[in-house]
Length: 490
Ligand code: ADP
Ligand code: MG
Image (tube, rainbow, N blue to C red; front, top):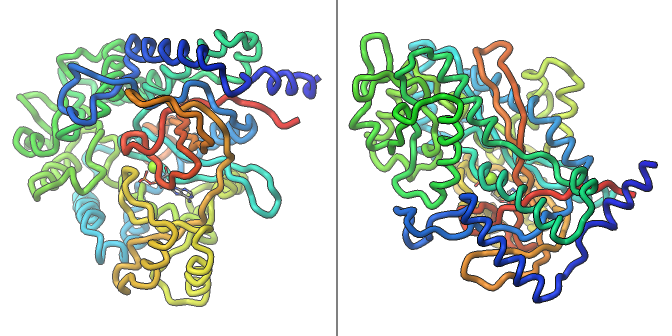
């Protein structure tokens, strides 16, 4: 029975490539749908205004993705949310594992300084909120040729693209219908995808917990943001839940420095009203802190009663360094009580190595990376899809990195994602039919005090990029938004 059903699923995926006339018709339809549903971005050369927007970079069709690997990622999300929620409260661990990173990484150094002050003063707000997206690739193991789930990174701050992904799922259901894929197949192959109601629910819970009807939801934003509309959908959903639009404000960190103050009871005040939640959609990149003023603003927020998403502990826990240290023997297991849960998480770890030590293992792995550059990537602590060192550049960096800078990088096994084919649709460019690879993200939250937070998982994002592109990131221009078409192996 299962065998038969599986075959139906595969046979009913659309046959590619599509005929030219059909492709043109469907692409035109997609652009209409995108604009009608707010699946749009600002123009690259006019990022300050939403007056004229363009279709978000998208795939025309959903991309095949193994069902068991997808389900594994969804199952893991609550565990990851709990793991990072827990690590965030372990000040000493976080300070210790970043001791070499801070030698040369000023951004992490500033974060750690604030973390230390928060520890010294005690948490003014014991309730925290992690809105998270964990990213993975469906990696083909070279030895066994089996596909498995491997984590790329975790995002504890400014997890984006959920609104686009949610809307694109609606489109992908629509196009499968147009291509006469039977309804029952669509139902099984396209999982429900509603990250935005979940994110709004998390924010609403935090705002309600603060329990002052006039308190603000402060959305911290970049000076310029091409992906404004994706963020706005979260706010609109939050309004539907009952936060008045007059309680939601968007401010840059520079404006926060100018307008925010702490009162005698450590409430974060703006325009005479307290801030219930600081929702960071910026603050993850050194660019967002051009001067000390922005750091001062961040410190004020962290020393306040506002619920931060994320709070500084959770953001420090977000580094690639934390991810690498967790993969070392026995470290993850310190934070996850149940051995079976720890095992399930550990299965999703790719190989990761620190560079700062001069022991045999490090020397061997560095030699290995220099000899086989195709099997490794080198990552700094930067967030936002801007810095991944591969190939010759990585080899050169491994040779030339000064001793004191080595701690700021991690070396990671290069994942080999499943190669699929799909149409990539970019505004004002010819549609391309490309061999491509995908990265799956699963959204979730952890809300509450240190012990026993509420956990929830809902919604996902697939980002797809040409097989030959090393970096990721839709906003960075490397990838396009996609959704999975789940199939089972037969
Ligand atoms: P960022 O914080 O900049 O988003 P990521 O760890 O997500 O950092 O890396 C950026 C992109 O680089 C990913 O989206 C992915 O496409 C690619 N990448 C990262 N790590 C690996 C890896 N181990 N193997 C293959 N590609 C990777
Ligand atoms: Mg990333």
